[in-house]
Image: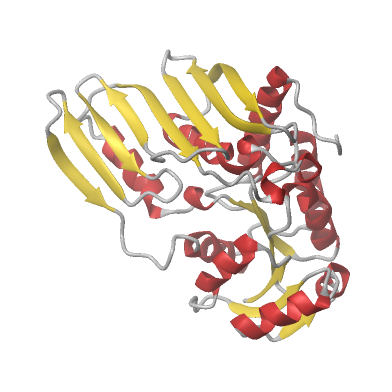
Amino acid sequence: MKLAVLATGHIAEKVTQTLVQMKELECYAVASRELSKAQEFKRRFGFEKAYGSYQEMVSDPEVELVYITSPHSHHFEHMKLCIEHGKNVICEKAFTVNADQAREINRLAEEHRVFVTEAIWTRYMPSRNIINKVLSDGTIGDIKALTANLCYNVYHRNRVSNPELAGGALLDVGVYCINFALMHLGSDIMDIHSSWQQIDTGVDGMNTMTIRYRDGRLANLTSAITAKSDRQGIFYGTKGYVVITNINNPSCIRVFDYDDNLIRSVEVPPQISGYEYEFIECVKAIEEGRTESWSMPLSDSIEVMGIMDGIRAQWGLRYPME
């Protein structure tokens, strides 16, 4: 399947290192608003085409799937452009700026009958099902709570901290914490309470979220762009606990009994990087004529954006484009 990459920033470079190793895809085209950047990207990774505008790229009839890597603030605009030109889309997280935009993308995708999904890579990884299987086997009893954190000291990057680009910890890394909770505890949520630390640009540098489920379970989540954390996820059960190494790309699941003895350790299968799974699913879904992913349907993206809208409303944080 012929893939095009829209925008040539840090994440595009990082993910393309995996894409060029995949047999399911042909790295066909790349586009940037500066032709020289697209040409350099093309040269480095062996793409066939380089375009100096996104309009030119989506007008290429050979393009079958577009991977959108622009800042959050531009995801809606760029997905709309692709969809209206009949292109299948996989768009980086956060999917949009808010839930209203996500709902409109869903409507457009249905209208044009194209495949659209969010590139929240943890949703597609084998670790998702491995963790759920470990949690459901009864070893640690009934799950009562989880904690998860994802913090990096990256606020100096403009796209991460600039409100004009819908920056901030919540949309950049907190989205992974929320997805982690929903993947493993579900979404039967009673309420969510959150606090934040505001940085000088006006966005959140750090935040904490407490999700209270209707069955009494709790998820305590922390994300930041101003500090480094251990990135662990921990599930608390009546008979023990489970520790996940790095919720952003789980590598090991360790199970402990009530007396803190390590009783089981599960390694995640070997992989290129973890990015490959979302693209493998895209190719398979498109070949089957599907318009949505089974690991990250658009309803789930809308749900996550709605949760983040509610959290930002608690803080009083609105982006300029809103």
